[in-house]
Image 1 (cartoon, rainbow, N blue to C red):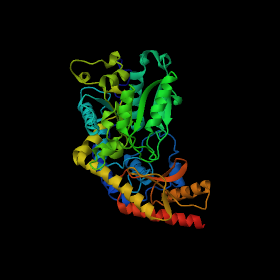
Image 2 (image 1 turned 90 degrees about the vertical axis):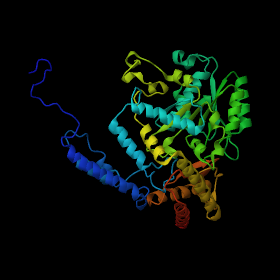
Image 3 (image 1 turned 30 degrees about the vertical axis):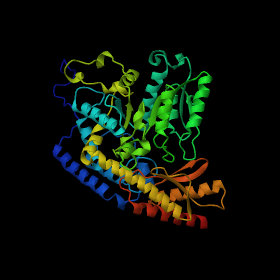
Image 4 (image 1 turned 60 degrees about the vertical axis):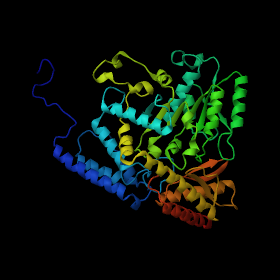
Length: 491
């Protein structure tokens, strides 16, 4: 025995690297070829399909104890995973508001994984690129160069970052040291009744509670009612609460409605409140030449949440939080233990990116965004946003021209809410009919749409956030919706 190690001097040390790199290289080329074909031929496949029982059973296999050849493992991926996606890369996926990815971004994710850097910070190229992508996001939003930001998993976390800085800045005490119980006057945050559910989660996680988030009525266009907001702030202030933050929607998840961001920014300034913009739906409209006016005022925000994995079509996941006051941002999250202290030179001499969020370990999200922006240029992404918004209005016009269908909410940008007419049915039976249409569209692989309730009315919802969508796809959606509605009604 080796006295120093306690192991036999002849024992073989192991690694996860392959024993034969040549075999892995051949298989890797095959995987790339298959990946190109997968995206190239996406239109030839159903948007979504139910998994058969044997595929479901495959995912109940117990923990593997011994090796399996990589080629066999890839064969299982080809047979059991790739044919059964969520479908969001397909041109007729409009269920939820998410981007449709891009091949260059997928290559970026692969290369980021190969390089393997941890983006907690430090002096290395990935950390500099991370900062550069944040800077590019600031430029797209019209935020000053002195602003701060961080890449995160997505919109929910980006919103929580902004709300946390708002809470700490407006609390009037050192919340990090003393906790929310020491806040003298309970804080109040405000958003419209169309606000995304992640804000409730955020308020709960921040220890403020759901009741600290006042939902203000929206108007006929489903934008926040400014007069009602002003009255609620005055009422809360008189009752001993501290109005702390206004959350503006740059596109609501239900209908895409955009609050009057300029009016909200002015009101927040008058009331000495933080102005946060939830821009996960529509902040990036700021780069769209024909529609940028819709989000005027977003550049006045104290913080913005946006999602590169939506209208920049980065592969999941990639969110971004921007904060105007860089010192307030860092002071909200920075902790410097002895094992993460900076050094004057070497690896630890770079900026610690974990000082700007909740994660210490972070993946290299920036490369997929950086590569796609370099390849296409921001102007093309702006044109694609204009294209989706035009497609949304094209679909709305198709629905208005079709007697069997009706719009159920104004089409502001690229989200269209409608339903199959069912005048002779009560609301529950009409909901059941439209839900069945939605499910059959999915099950037949035609299109993936979702449903929601807007101002008390159930409806179908189409969110066109897809660079592969063509107008012919929307023609097909209308025709198939009418066909299914007629079939179900006649049954």
